[in-house]
Amino acid sequence: MTDNLTRILIERWRDDPAGTYRSWFLWEERIKNFRSIRRGIAQVVQEIDAGTFGNKYRDSSLETIVSSVAEQRQIFKGADHAFLWKPKLRIPDIYESPDNQRAFGQLLHACACCNTAEQIIAAIHRIDQLAIKGLGPAVANLLYFLHPTLMPPFNTAIVNGYNALTDAKVKLGRWSEYLAMRSGILALNDKHRDLLSNDLGAIGGLLFDIGSGRYTAPPLQDDASAKRVWEEDLAKVREQAASAQKALASAQENDRTHTEIQGWLRDLGKALGYTVWIASNDRRRPYLQGQLADGCVEKLPASIESTAGADAVKLIDILWLDKECTRVMAAFEVEHTTSIYSGIVRMLDLALGSDLHASEGLFLVAPDNREQEVRAQLARPAFSRVADMKVRYLPYSELEKHRETLSRFSSGIKGVHAISRLLV
Image (cartoon, rainbow, N blue to C red):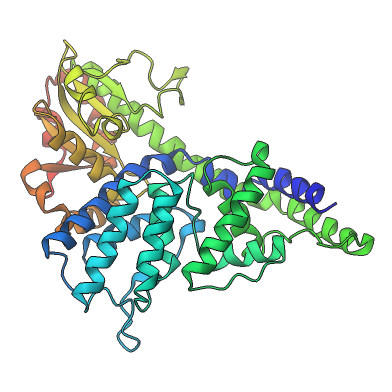
């Protein structure tokens, strides 16, 4: 009985426009952030290993990547709380203790380099034995972005949802409890794999929506009265879907705006004589009477394809290449509402991964009111190497105002330089 009700719940949850499955798990921008967060974790490890990480969270490379995680819509909201320095409690003790900091770096390094669950769990046991104050399973949110098919995300709502769905009594703050919950999540995911995913973010989202109160877990006992009450609660969520559509419409409007800006840059690039590349996961997005990638190149130059960061470069929103399609001349990241951090990291992959990188400019394209946010991100020590890249800020209003004139009367990149401004 319980399994059947759970399947009904999952099916209803998958169709809910405001549930995490549709609003976060299927969100195209979610995938873009994986590599940037992984790269950020690698930088944290490098700084700890070199002794340059420092002794504070604010403005650190760790804050940069945790903030990027926390921006992953509702499921990771508050992910940074566990890493904020709490002076009265002196936790998490990775800022004042160099030994604990190095142990934390070794955990991240071991998990980044391994590829089996056994290796990850062994690394967790090693850090757990040190009993570092305040460094608990909230770190699993970073491990999820390293190994989404092996490690589920973690927060209070997910734990509450798991306990409600399985009648378990998992407690917060202990690695042993997290690993026990992980085993149960894997079993639950295997049982309903056809409705969920190999990526444990899906079932993590389901548990989050149960634990945060959007859905009520099915009754554990075969009780007709309890089942009726549960079905009534489920029906209420369906009735609320109309209001939830407003939230979905807002998210879709953001996606449409992002696509429209990409379309402007696509058409401007063509008019200026460039060959244009559209981000690999955006190519089939509807635009005007066709698709966004219509008339654009389908393959990047071999010099880019062969670099270690090629997968990230392919996700840059717009690349302008020379006519012969042999080198990238300019790169554009459109940051409508998503993390500025992720776009900068993708540009770093391009700029540092090839000798033929965006010789005419790297551009962050964003709404006019995000300029200070863009500048604040680039001022972080984590992006100290960006200063040599001469990244430029291109506000929406300038692009909208001048794109047609540039298309008709300009040639090359000079006009785009004129309507944008250097950030560093």
